[in-house]
Length: 345
Image 1: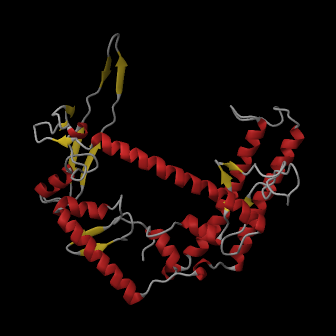
Image 2: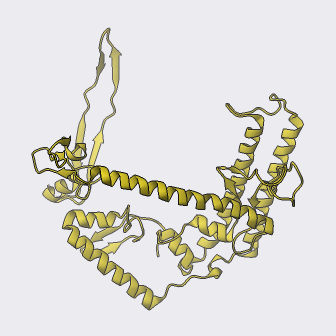
Image 3: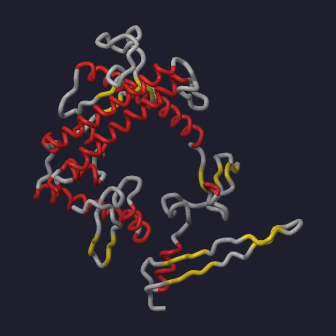
């Protein structure tokens, strides 16, 4: 499998490039869009059915399994990850020492615009810890990429089938800072998140930095703090589902009597024949038949008429402003040149 997301070219039944999520996807499937636009929705459905059968046959014949050993790292990589986490924690300690030495003097510890000194400190610490997680993740990512096409987990992440490299970084590298509402953990016991830490401590470990990974395991305090940040996403999901469901219900009830009439402007009217919209979508373009907001793809039409092969090049000279007159500014005319290369014209 090619690891570069090159463009996919299909000529006379021969496919070059990597067929990943960008080529065949629910929202951004460019190859599927091209087939539907040029050959119709029935050919698009046929392509999906046959491609699915081909994929299932390939996985059945060749096999495609993943396990926890796909996240194995060498001892050198583990040492590099440990060093990156330790360096991030040391930088946080130095920042805290610098903050304490300032003793509330803005001249020694300058706050950001619109932020207090304490808020500026927290923002600086968050940047340091995020950079530390990124450094540990880069080590894990480089190590996993060296495993080649035999690593099924990396193949799934790169192709867009399931998961991402960030998920693999948390499984093999480092989880990083647990966050609640975009900030480090604050609430819990008096002046500390858990009773296992000193009161008033603001170090990396005290406020929810998780240096471990899901494969190597978590400390009990790390597991608790990760659960705190995980609850926020669960609550957001539950609240968002009810709000979006109620919004969809109101939209359906508001628009269930609308219809696009087959007049010159494709107007939208209700059952009382009152015009709600003079032209459907303000442009009269069917989204299922349009091409990125346009009614048709002019490049495909020109290439089909001239025998070219998708090499329409449009060059525009930049506008140059002349000396301004008393009332009106003088502008050079815009010149447009269209070159068609590669065809017999």
